[in-house]
Length: 272
Image (cartoon, rainbow, N blue to C red; front, side, top):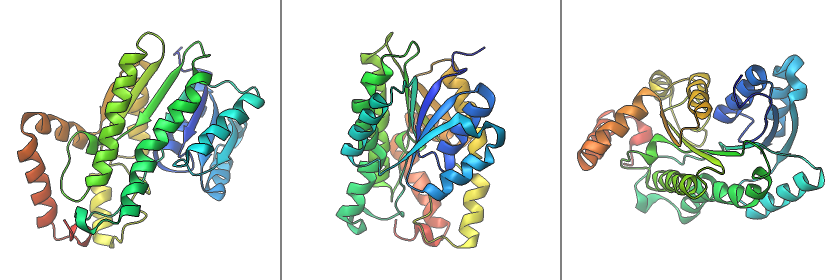
């Protein structure tokens, strides 16, 4: 038996990608009750159907934009009014804008990536922490990225947001050590729909798929770390390589990664 068995978990970004994989794993392998946050009702209803006899474990879902603080305030009030207890919160929602030099990134895009990838987690923790603290096994896990470990040209906003999320989570882990488990997960390239807003040709899509790990693999390894209540988890061979070399030679590593992407001649990296 794991401390995760039978827990009540709230997961953002549950309709696809890592969030969906987390929900599926916790429901099927740990008999958890899951509440979800998403923006696409059609996708989450389809996911509920896919759960089959376990569909009842996906108790309820909430449709809102995670980047708006008032939505988190309202959610907290709804949970209180319905007397819903939450043991674990997992923040998975994320937004990766197209790769571009900073001067070609609009102010709206920069704000959007910071709001979704960083501030949404700040709002989540701020408004749900009082509820989670009531659990016997309180835990909040934020999904960051390998971009928080090693950066390169073209992802200034995304890298900044994910690095801020990592440091935010590690700081909270220290503040609440012994009271609440805070975990930060930094996965490498993962087969998700995070490239939805990118204009990618088939050749580039195949390349991304080739270097990416499946959501199930990333989530499986992440849960093993969560079981042990690890504060920082670097998941995926590419994330581990980036983390290792960036610690040894940060400037050189950033140059090498950028050079490789430019030499690839892929259109998606054409503006870096």
